[in-house]
Image (cartoon, rainbow, N blue to C red):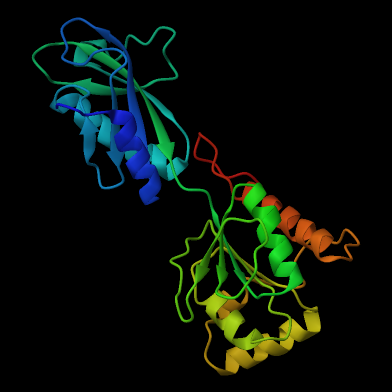
Length: 267
């Protein structure tokens, strides 16, 4: 394709924010249309952007990309004729796919998944909320705050009133409203799919709000997710120290739920 540049396509996908994989041909043997160094992007829907080879290679790449995105870890795969799949030698770390293509060629590929950084949603326009947004941005989180929250130097997305982000279980929410719209903020936080929700408040205050939300019909399973007070007990006093304690707890939670290449969770 005239003017086609796979790196431009990859950057377009990155800007869109949806997960995808980059597949790179690292070695070929015998007759094959794929060439070493060839790259393609594979969307979450299985669309291949670029050229990697014939139908057998494409099917294997799509399957491996789905696994790589699910595990959050790269995959080394080899697409080879059926009679060669047992001849692994030093390549036992590779995942093998049988090829029925008449060419009889072998193609080895590296599949690298890409997902946007986890999101930290912050409710509140308080000094703690601002400090948290600044530190979280430095750590690479995608930070979102409601409109009116001053975020200092942090690059954040400010949400219009009533706008609800589509959070995932790997995302986190911190309610740092501290007396200004606590119920509304906490209700909105628990209505997301975020895997970790915390509130900057005393345990007693959080229990009172939790009881009120129970009366309002909020699901008990979601209420059980709520953590308060937010942050590890490091004797934090000022907003920046409190922000660091919250981020430390978020990092501990994130790493405890990380999926390793073998597909096992830590912790």
